[in-house]
Length: 193
Image (cartoon, helix red, strand yellow):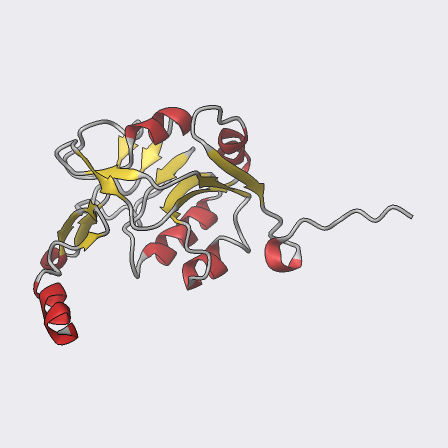
């Protein structure tokens, strides 16, 4: 019985569904698009650049956009960047670029145990905002998909991105100031003697 289930999952892998969540995926061309909910852009924007913008956008995510056709990793970044990178094995490469740029707000799954998080978030991020509940991402046609298969976090690199997270009054969640220079990223406790 389990073997049939595995075969069915493998056979349907071109259009994965996690819980009640599906997203646009074209594995043959390496394309995977998860469109950011517009309320996230409104709450934390405006942004100068989105280097991971979909080719066909139902709404603008920034003033300037790079799509998969432009290779946003290879392009110069300026000012405040919003990055909802391709989720999967290349997420860490995008987070490394966000950290290098130093003026970026990134949206990824809150999978704190991954190499990407351990290498590019805890030691480099200014702050994090863990979004309450699970987001519903959108399809390229502008229609809302089901609930995501994991919780999401916004990661601030730099003071302006951090300010956007701290001043948020719209999206429910928990703000966490990161202390990259401290072991384990924890804020040192003040000792009163």
